[in-house]
Length: 427
Picture 1: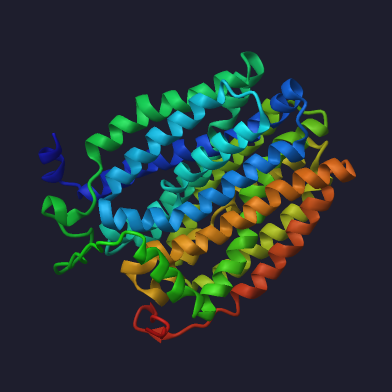
Picture 2: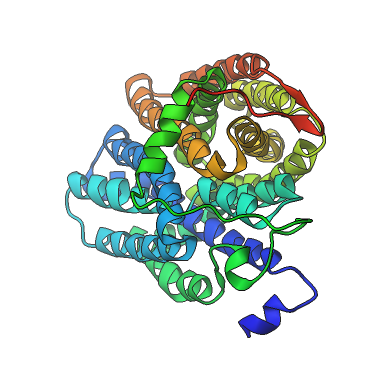
């Protein structure tokens, strides 16, 4: 069957995109599950939202720090092996969650085990696939795969919220393990290949043979080298700082706390999860369009617009609660902007640091995204406990997004035929 697919009219790269899309959209749903569990865990165990948010924050940190090392492991051991090991680890952690009795076990299982494993199948995987399998359409493919990663955490939330409400939160956690092993694992094992050259093909759109770099005998050395390369670059720091704010305002704040905030305003958990699902659907549109625009416009200007519009939207969110039409409008608008920032950020990273290093360097930029998410996940939960409202957290995140818009315009541009040229970096 694989031979027929390789010799088909469509390039095998598009099948890789489909399989990667399925993997990212489901594993992102796994990572977002604790957002559904905040209120049920608080009710059953009496844990504060700050205590539960600490586990989510830890998971976001591990998720971000795992990403650059997983990119390095993909270079050394292959994409398929890393994806399969990550899926088994996710299923194990989610299964053990159903028998936990203490908050430290939540920290260990959802924070360390599931958080670290989902970092191996996240946005850096999208960047790696797009740059290995595509010579042209990379911005579009990055947008599609990034949209799946962000949308998955929202598309599955209504079903998980319904399971947690109707049958108990353990059913929601157990469903994660079942989907990982029964649905996603076999698809990855059967169809994923590491590079087009391994099956006798060249990247989609390539007009001449593309060389395959040698594998490093020390798998973590490329990750460390990527960090050392990045920290000597002004562009890296501007991207990392703006992406820190990106994570703070999306995964950490809205992705984690919109459902409990909706419950605070007398909505059901399923209704709050449905708002996130609506964001997920429009995120596919927004991020895919962002990828298309990234192939045609200056990515710095795109980033500035995305962050500025997001900031204004999240500042307005506290005033939208209690009005159904306003919340739906917010969900649609915020969904279009959710991770539209990723394609231009990946494009700038690739152009400044080179295509073969984009997975690892962007992995470190993405780590800053998750650090920002971790800060917001804990701080928003803690401030809700201290002040009795999420409004201060929403307004603060919106103001920081306006700062990120200004930082994006400070990224340097170097002209070359067709766009940017790599920024000179010391060696």
